[in-house]
Every structure is written in structure tokens, then in C-alpha cells.
Amino acid sequence: MNRRTLLKRTLAVSAVGVAASAGLLTPGQVLAAYPKGAFEAKDTAGALSGAVGSSSFEDSGDIKIKAPDIAENGSVVPVTISTGMAAESITILADSNNSPLVGSFNLQGAEPFVSTRIKMGKTGNVLAVVKSGGKLYANKKEVKVTIGGCGG
Image (tube, rainbow, N blue to C red; front, top):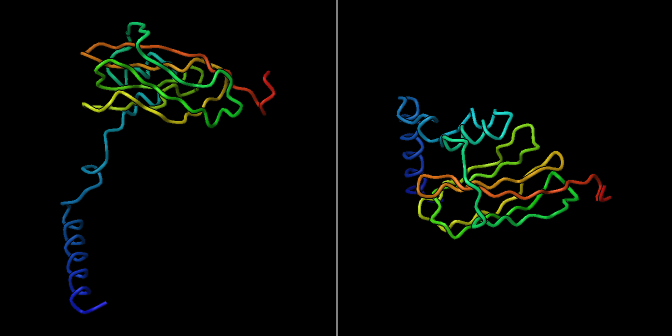
């Protein structure tokens, strides 16, 4: 490392340190919004209301949920949600979990497709809620969770 690089890095670290100590850089300004009430809700209606602002939705066959019928390991259940609607957000809930909200994805013009792995404590429905045009649409699929892959 030459002297010029050392001086540039030292100056950069010093500037960030001064800005942080002066209160110009605070973690609250950097972190994303966290819907605390939605993640602490114990039922699907409360979780959905906290995540997207409403708990009423219409059933829709336009929402495709790809998930296994039987999940041998409830801690890693692959789920893929897609739709042909112009979606603003996609929210995934597992109604049998103690905390049903799995995640809410704001799409803002992106392709309406989400693929993730979720944790399910026991057999239950995976509910996909799509917000499109200010309205909520949902579809669900039952996933049977087995212990040790014995099918029971």
C-alpha cells in the first residue's frame, strides 16, 4: 500500500466517524420499515391487516402457488408465488404457524414473482395475498408437514 492510498482511506474513515458522532448518520434512517404488529399477530387476519392495511380479500385463481403437497422437513418448505396481475405487493402467510406472517414483498413495477423457503411448524395452508389496483386477492394451498418424512 502506498502513502497516497493510506491517506485517502484514513481521511474517509475519519469523515464517517465525525458524521456518526455528530448524529448525522443514525441507524433509524438506514433501516427498512418493520411492521412490528404484523409479525407479532397470532392470527392471519391480524397479520394481514398489519402488513397491508386490510384483512378482507377476494379469492382468485390467477395466483399460482407452487409448493410441495407433502413437506418432509417443515423448516425448509420451498414456495413460489406468481400471478398475471399487475401486482403492487405479494404477502405470504402460513396460517398454522404461531406467527403467521412469513413475508411481504413490495414489487413496485417488478415482475410479480416471488420464490423463497418458509418454515412451517405443522400441517396448514400457505396463503398468498396479492395487492393489485388497491384490492387484495388471495389463493391458498395446503401443505402437509411430516416429521422425518414418514408421511403420517
